[in-house]
Image (spheres, rainbow, N blue to C red):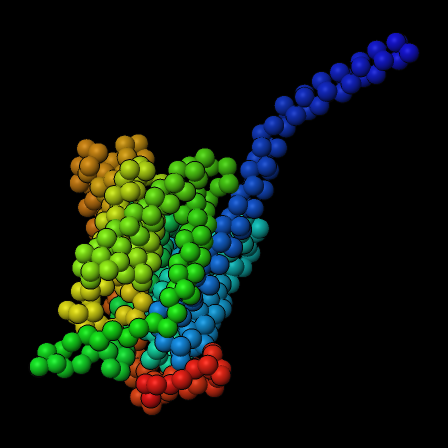
Length: 445
């Protein structure tokens, strides 16, 4: 019995030794396969989190607008992803990540022809970002836009407008990226693109009926209350949750240990954004405003998205706080001074705070995180200057092309519904249904 145990033990030792030698010979290949598999899982799961943000955008927009348009808003958020995904598959990916033409636009990989599993993975991760840029516009144009016109817009932003500026920054060969412009997860690439397109749409479309009234010869903004603050709050929490896929997923690797850093800076900026907006609204209006506080959390998230991997946790606290204050001031300025009707504050949250977050990289980038540290860390003004150049360039591209697009749609198929249809509500006039059948009363007919 003793000899049998010795023989078994000897066999085990030789087996383990042989396995170790084999493992050593194939360690590099095994590690590479493991990392590829882990990255595949990580990016697909992160993309799924970002896709779930579509539900968040829908709930925020539904909650902050009137009940008679809820179904229309759900349809817009469903279809801007659906038509946008097809457009990004056919053209958008190629313009954004194809072989470059002078650093300005991609020229191949249309319809993902010849794609392997890695490229398909990357397309899936990127299409949900494209959808985010597209759906931001929905809120600014809510309650008065023709559904067919919105579908047309969704195709163009997903196929051309978003991918071209994205190529400049994220393709690895774009002219802005080559200058050192840094936007880790999309304060400019995604959010400002959506915000500036939203601004163009809101200007072209004009305000909702009854939004601005004449009082003693002066144009005065009249608040049009949303119908469901709990839905808006649910939407913000869904967006916050999905943002971990947005920012942490942008590490592009499930084995990148900076995921933890990105998660912390994202959380802190969202928190101080909400706090900053709450305090600002409390001081300005005499009460802590729920809708402003919710938008403050989103403002903090947008603000940290560009610099979440290069700012310190303390820097993230400051970036989020400034974004929270800024969003309240911006909403008030756009509404009461510029008289541009943005029902959910999309331009302020995504456009204005996207600019702030992008510029904040040039202020708060820690030494060693980029070639040039931020101004506050002794890195000089180079990074801040490049960030400012990117902000101006993307604004010019998006705002001009979106204005052209919306005006062409306005002159051809029409952009805005008829006055009677707007009063009736787009659920009934555009879709022939009611979202709250048996409960809805049209007191504003």
